[in-house]
Image (tube, rainbow, N blue to C red; front, side, top):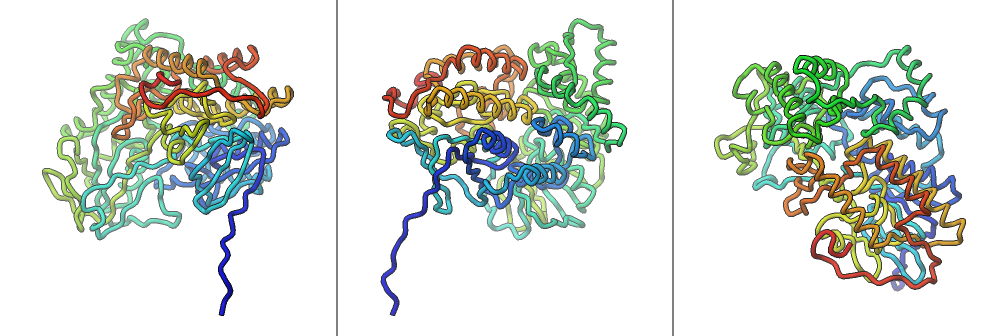
Length: 560
């Protein structure tokens, strides 16, 4: 006969800092904060490190920023020793790089895998964050850093009849680790954003039949990917410091110099020649062919018309061509894709485009997909439907600040931050590349490093003065959001329905979420805040009384 069962409370681990996420942002935070002498626990929901590059293993997955720029700059030895093989690295190569960094700098010993954050609450009396995960494990920490990424919470559609499908269903952002053989199969891809545009040319070469279900056409530019020769590699590494500095001083965080001309101040012949050169060399950098493409509608029209003409050249069938031609929004106001033969793929006899804006999907049947105008028999369905972008992974767990106020409540009308880093009412919590920062409007690797280094300086500043609680003021937060909104209104971004505006999720507040003032302009603001003694932050000892907060809800700025 067994004795009575005793229930043990979970052990709570105490550290100086909990970092949520073991992708590029989380690893950089760990490396830097460990260098300050802090004890750090990195909590990762996945079974291994890598963040988006661990989950997104779909055929054709590739970075759309050049490999040399989409990498860490904190170690000269690292950037000299790592050898990129292609201009735009594939997912396996990016993941190998991330694992190399983790091993080279002994980061794994502070990373806790299979630990999905469920709740984090601020203990005002002790000035500590209490953190709990799905597995029941707990941590307490002085500082909480959300390094969860902007594109990490998947958007998975739920169609009627989905459970009845007899074939296989995959999501691009949750692709199996084992190989998926599509040879000879009838495949349906739902979605033509970046993931869909990358995988469709690859799948078309393998599948017997490929049906592409498109709701809205988007602009795409050619990646022009190519192997990197030893000579090219040596040339970049000889001037890597200058390349990094050029990126830091650019609007985009990319290393090539932006064009300071307006698209409207040159002749049509000069403009077309310039677009041709950019189309055949710049890849994603085409968005900066002229400085005013996202600032002036007339300037944008010239680029949009150029790309539409390129689509017309690439796609032979007039009806398909028209469906693939984006209209009704300015180029680059939705993040444009970077592809390898996407438009030409629709010339293949085994590829068909289905316009689900005109013929919506009614149901998934045991044999395939039925729209309002037809039925399509399939063996495999792939959801390339993207993410709950920018705020999705921040609002998925319950994060509780002062007075029991949750982040979901505070952000009910849209995200509120100061500099994209801190949130009033949530002391000692920081976001890496969060809403209100350049994030997805930049080379996010550069923006991550910019945030982590600035945060390290902030923590050092506070520690040197004997302060252990850092909090954004409501006034600074309100002023920053007004600035972010004003900057957005100077651009064409609000004219498109996009994840920049929260349009990807029904019911999500429609506000512009990144910072459109550019990497260089944003850095100048960070520098000024630092020079002004970290204006907008209140630093105090834990025992100091805390300010009360207003109620949640209302307009985006009502309770900032």
